[in-house]
Structure formats: C-alpha cells, structure tokens
Image 1 (cartoon, rainbow, N blue to C red):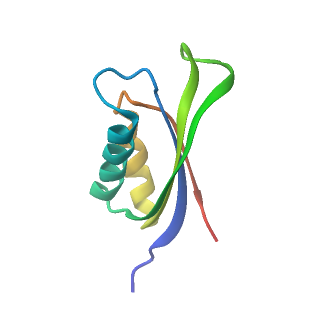
Image 2 (image 1 turned 45 degrees about the vertical axis):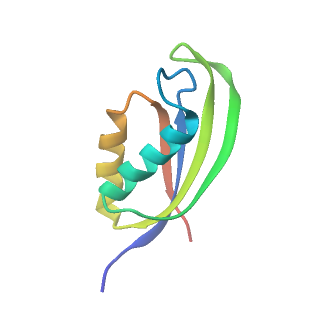
Length: 97
C-alpha cells in the first residue's frame, strides 16, 4: 500500500522568461513534477498577478496551481528540482485533505 497523498502546489512563473511561452513553461513544470514521482490530477492557471511589492526585481508573476498525488518525500525532491529552474520564481506546497 503506497502512502501517496494529495497536494496542491502553487508555482509562480517568471513572466519575463526569454524564448518560451507561458504555456510551454506550465507544461515543462508539470513534466518536472511528474519526473519526481507526482501524478498530476489538474493544472489550474490563475494567470498573471501583480505582487504587492517587488520581489527579486519582478513586479508580477504567472500563478499556476498544480493538484497532484505524491509520496511525502517527493515534495522535497520537487522543491529542490524547481529551485534550479530559472523560470520558477516562487513555489509553495500544501497537503489537501
């Protein structure tokens, strides 16, 4: 029996990324999640939102919610992997009941 749990991951993409469309970025982050063992249920694009303050020289980001199932230890791997992705500005994960 696997201990797979449901998670919601909020990923904020850098909208100023060179050479890739937002759609391509959303798909590539989904593929990175799956490469670390996540099973995507749903990808919900919230869209571009202005930050209340400038964050690392950005005024806005493209918000995407990823709903997925994964083992608890996969979250650390996902965070580490996406931290290396220059297109990912911020990421936050929480368990969904």
